[in-house]
Every structure is written in structure tokens, then in C-alpha cells.
Image 1 (cartoon, rainbow, N blue to C red):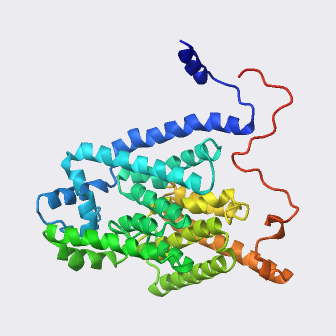
Image 2 (image 1 turned 30 degrees about the horizontal axis):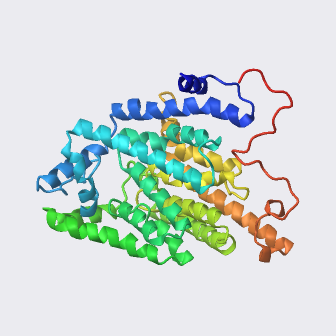
Image 3 (image 1 turned 90 degrees about the horizontal axis):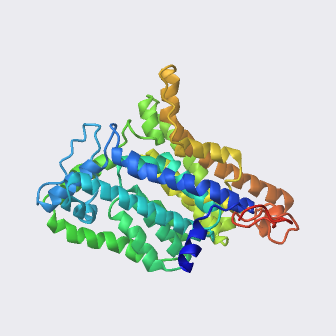
Length: 434
């Protein structure tokens, strides 16, 4: 009886005593129900525009039944199966169940992977699940276009995001072989995280490359003789992957082709942003590599944003991989502590649609361009912040001390921002209620 009373008391509504408790009480129910809505309703309902799961399921079924896998018609705009034989081997078990139940299970696996990845992201920044950052992160994540469409279209990006967070966590802990194994598993399916190998390269963590390359090679060696048409992946799929398409493509080249821009102008924009990215990476390495968390998270965001924007294919839901950069906003020296950065984030994260039945042309342009413009603005903001800090430090003659403004330094007698999970001082009189 006593235990029952204690348990029921824990469920009794309480009056918040601090700002942190207020935020937690307000946001946790909203965040949890938003996540459930995305998983149980929107994802299960699916969408008429596209279904990323069906070609993957069909390929897995063909693989298990010893039928050709790489038979896609690349002349159509329907989703195509593009995973290599190693990826086919990993996803083959999904075809054991019927398509509907398999899809539901795949949605659940992605949702769980995203939740685990978010927990790892919190821990990477030394934030507890009880901090106000947790419900804010959960609500923002499951309200975003990237997570919502990943679940609705039912692709593998949630699992790739988990692989990214495991890789970054283990990389920071110097567990190199395991970090390489985590990112190597994602390479076996899709090489979207390949730019992140620059991190262990410049940090001298050479063992990462052993498992990062070894695992996909081993899986390929196992899958190759089990596949009926593995060479068709090389002959048909690889050439297609190297091409740029003008639909469902938010990279500069994709939107440039869609709007009929001259090839020279497209290449000019790509090279211009490449110069900005190289400069940003140099400034980060030169002045921040000893600030490990800031350096790893910010460099991760720059590398991946650049690959989405400057590569042959960039799709909006790839932006899920940018959460580590966005999370740096809790750091005092973050490049994300300004309004243009979050204007950029709105562009590639918002689930809003700008298609208009009244303003057809402008609405279509806003919808098709917002992800491209968002990625572009984010790279410009990171570069501008770093460049401004560098020029200010050079003007003041303190480059040898780093480029952070004086008020951000640990030894500066400046005010400190309260940590996201730090409680406010207790009131002098206790509020009514519990």
C-alpha cells in the first residue's frame, strides 16, 4: 500500500519552482506527442509523392530469392534502388516479413535510432536527459522536415544519423577502431558520411581507417557471390550516381539545371562556395582544434553541408546529419549564436510548405530553393563569424592567443551564460502546491 501511495504521488501534478521546471513541464508532453504523431500517424500513412521503402524492399526480396537486384529504370523519376551489394546484404532481412509489417518495423527502427542518436548528442555536449535541452531537442527534431520526411518516405537516414553520432562519440573518446566500425557500417549502405573521415585524418587517429574501410570491404566480399548481378551495380548504378539530376535535388547543380542556369555560372557558384568551405576548415583547424567538442561538431557541420550543397545530389532530409552543428548553440563560442544562422536553419529544417495556389511561380521558387538557400546561408554565416573573429584578433595583436573574442575566454572577467540545465535561484518563499 505504501509503495502504491508513493508511486501515485510521483504522478501528481506539481507546480514548477524554477524556469527549468516550467520549460520541462511545458515541452515534454508536446515533444512526446509530436514524436508519436510523426511515427504512428504521418509515417504509417505515408505520402503519395514518393515511397523510398518500396524499392529497397523489392531489392531485398529479389536478393533473398536469387533474382537480379539492379534492374531500375533510371529514365523515370520514381525512387531507385542504389545501395551496393554490401548494403543489400544488410537490409535483406526486411523482406522476411510482408511489405506492410516490414515497413512499420523499419519506421520503428528509424525512430528508435533517432532517439538514441539524440541521447548521444545530449551526452556529447554534457547535457542530461533532465535538462531543458532534452525536450527542446526532441520537439525540434520531430517537428523538422528532415525527420518527418525520413519517417514518412521510410528511408534509412535515421539509422545513418545514429551511425554518425556513435562515430563522433567514439572518436571523441579516442576509441578509434570502434569509431571506424560505426561509420564503416554506414558506408556499406551509402557513403553520405564519407567527408567526416577528414576528422580522424587531421587528428591523427589512423586506426579509424582500418575498420572504416575494412567493414564495407568484408561485407562486399560476403555479398558479392550471393548476388545474382553484382556487376550491374558497377556497370549501371555507379555511372548514375555520378550524374546530377534536375528533380528532387537541392544541390546547387540540381537547382541550377532545373532553372536552366548556364553551366559556367553553376560551376562558378560551386567553386566560390568551395573556397569559403576551405577557408572555414582552415580557420577551424588552425585556431580551434584543441577545443575538441567545438572543433569536431562545427567541422562536421561544415563538411556535410558542403557535400550536400556542392555535390551531385543533395536532398533536404540529409539535413538530419547537421544536428551536431546546431547543438553547438549551447557553447559560448558557437558560430550559431546569431539570427542569420537560424534563418538558414529554417530554410533546410522547416516542415512548412511555400507552395501557393495564389502565387504559383514565386511560391514554387520559394519551396524549391529554400533548402539550397538555407545550406548556402549556413556556410556563409560560419565563414563570416570565423573570418570576423580572425580579423579582430589580428587587429588587436592576439592571434597567438586564439581568435575567440576576449569576453568568451575562460580567464576573462566577463559574465557567463547559464548552462541550459542550470536551475534558477530558489524563491525566498515556496510557491503554492507541490
